[in-house]
Image (cartoon, rainbow, N blue to C red; front, side, top):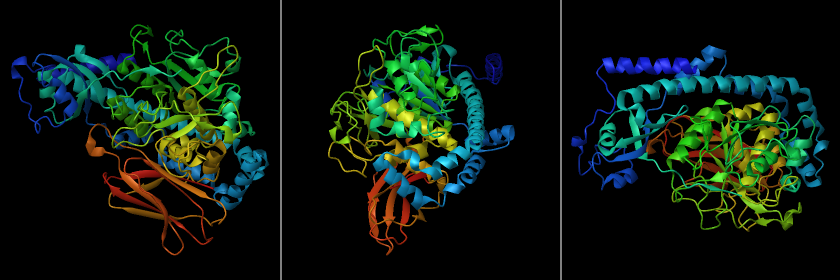
Amino acid sequence: MSRIIKKTTALILAVVLTVLGFSPSTVSAQEFIMPYEPLLHSNITAELLAYMSDMQGDDTVKVHVWITDVDFQAVEQEVFQAIGFSEESLMIESDSLFSPLHDLHNELFVEFSENYLNEDFDEIEVVLEFFENTIEERAMLAESIDFYISIKREIASEHYYIQNTMFAAQYLSSSDIYFQSKFSPMMIVELTVNEILELSKQHDVELISLYVNDYFASDFSTDIQIRSVDANITRDSPHFFNGQGVRVGMIETGRPELSGIPELNNSSIIRRGTGNNLNITPHASLVAAVINGSAGAAPRATVISTSAFFNVATNSDSTTHSTAVEMANIEWLISQNAHIINRSFGSSRNGSYSEFCRWIDHIVNHHNVTFVQAAGNGGANDFVGLQSFNAIVVGGIDTRNSTVRNNHVFWNSTSVRSGAGLANKPDVVAPATGFSVAGRASSNGTSFAAPTVAGVVAQMMSAVPTLRMRPDAIKAAIAASADRKTSGETLGVITDREGAGVINAIRGVNAISTAHLQNSALTIAGSTNTLEFNLFPMNTTTPMTVAISWLRRNTATGTTALTNFDLYIIGPNGNVITSSRSTTNNVELVRFTPTSTAAHRIRIVRVNHNNAVERLSYAIIR
């Protein structure tokens, strides 16, 4: 929808609503009610109620207002009418394309395992031949998927524009609106206490919460780090995982330099705005180099960069951080059809599930984007940079400038605290030390561990385009890819400091090349509590890792809290061999060595919460 059409639509909506008797900001200061009535104002958060308790009725507060979400079934129907295919049909097409690999589980796993140990990845001829012979088909599938995602985002944005604009015209003054989302049913507004109380009575208002500008803090040879997780081996395999066609969004404190960084000379980089102000070190340039520099994980990917400070109204960077301005820049990345968004700085409100976290979970859930977040560099007593369930939060290891894995240790500067009742973060860890580009000082930080993971995700998406639609599948594969831990924590368990463990690109390839993620669109209907399916034949000498992941599907309120699933491995005699039963994570992970070659089963059990249809992805690696 063009800007002119949007402005005209907004004007028409405002006129119509005025004729119908609605006018903005209809509550007077005299209607202020004290004390607050909990049942009447149950959609106002306790934090906001406490904040307003000592205020007068005409005192103003900035708040997040979440309203009823748009109908995404209607969005999907419009997408199908516009382009003639759907996400489901694309999944079926992908499953058919990758079907030659479906019956090769044992052979491929053995070859991957042997060649992983020998670091001779190119000898896996069957895989190379498949990817060589399907270059055109995979490119066509990727084009269809990108077209689907772009049209879906465009139509969803139109729905949000109409709905949010109608709501604003009915209940708000335009001068009150600080930020109106283009991709979620949320806006940030400044209202009086009386207006907040009155607004909370409206049936389409799901949640009103305090706006707090989240604490902002910037984290300050790439080749060694990339090699430490085997991403160079996957990257350099012909026609394999170089990031071709994948668009990685960067929300940063500045922008990559366009000159003076040889590693970026041949990189595809799109920048919004100009200048590197607020970027004291070449932070953004280093992050970009890790993703798509000449020695980065995905050199053929396109990086789309914007500053978290860029203010479109002034066409320049602000001098202070504003969460609302950052949200607008992230939504711009989505409008530019980014498949992945990397955020290499931190913001955490003492480990709380903030409105920013809620909004990120909504964006990932509805708009087919994988969000990768740096954990932060505050150490053991600092909360991680983002408590989002759906994001992949990345902590750090210290490689000690060596590719010898026994030399690697946990990077103790990694922020590792999670809020009570929230998911264990970080999700995984990756190299965080010794990053450098020509002519610049070496830098450390989880800022560079995050783009390492983003680059590996781009590798996966370039080979298997379907993964661009499935952030849940990506998360399952990344968790299952972990091949070690450096701090003594148990591998095969989601733990406090290292999550699933150190990522490994080859093991990630294991998860997707055997097509487990292509036919993993598992759904559990509201009336179904248990799902079981068979594992392929066992090898009794090789440990296996099984991971499942699903998305937190919230829009605004706690009524759509994370559904809780448990994962069990059932042996041939029906006994439970091992299980993963976290109550707070949206990933379950087990690692075990089969004691028999007879059939085993995976059992997934819905424990509580959401009774709606849920979609899960799984990854199986040995």
